[in-house]
Image (cartoon, rainbow over all chains, first blue to last red; front, top):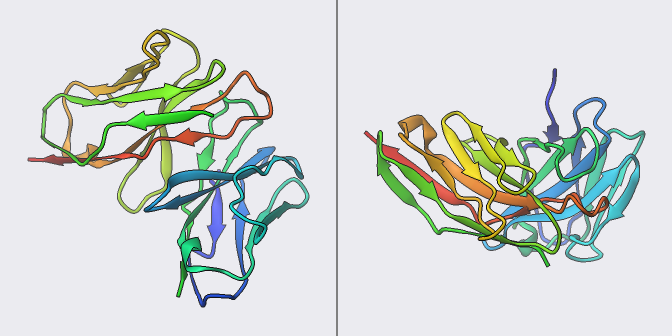
Length: 115
Length: 115
């Protein structure tokens, strides 16, 4: 079956613009996670969804970042008024259900470059 | 809060050499422990996991044992191959807290295997 997909694969934007990143989880996976991978910070957790609800948004770095999930499937991560420090690879993962022992399957990521 | 510390890279080995990548963790509960691997140009993949103390995870000749007394989860392989060249990430997830299934990652260790 299909794995986790993300689009776009690469995004170059100008400082101050808004961007939307999309994640399509594995069909039937109820949990969806967003992470960020950057040179300075390594791999950081941003937010996760159980169904359409987001019980843990603790990793969102500022109120410029938001995410939603609809229909228990596709999720969109939105970054408003992008800054150069937002440049990173944004990774999405899904798992069958929450719980630390459930394997998270990762997508290929979206590389965001803010000029 | 939770944290994972892994040895700095890069690690350069000759083919058939023995590999150890050290990983130690700090967690408030009883975490599950993981090693993820990122091959060049590819996404993160789960390599192995262990969900309780003294468990040994193994896959593709790699193994790691969950040591609660030393809070460690060191990755080992008896004979590395060129195809093992990748970045390896140690990670934990707090299983005891049903809302906290995010992964906390170490900084990653780059392994380069040469002929």
